[in-house]
Image (cartoon, rainbow, N blue to C red; front, top):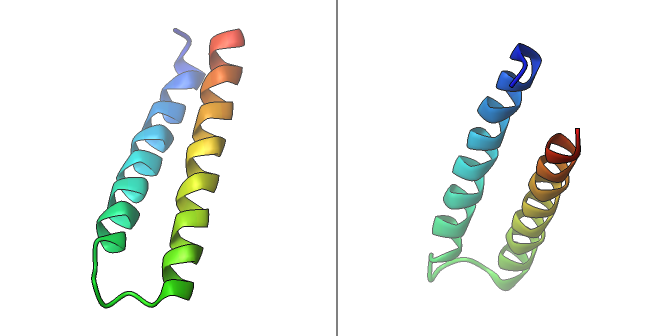
Length: 60
């Protein structure tokens, strides 16, 4: 693996941590439905971005 790719792993770990934090936040019973929908949309967007980036790195 070339050195320029190492920062991407740092980014992937940060994305994973953010997704986990958002999923934990979703467990809150006091979370309004509009906030829940927004958070879920952001979780989905982050997961899709992460998957696309991983596929681009693998294809490289």
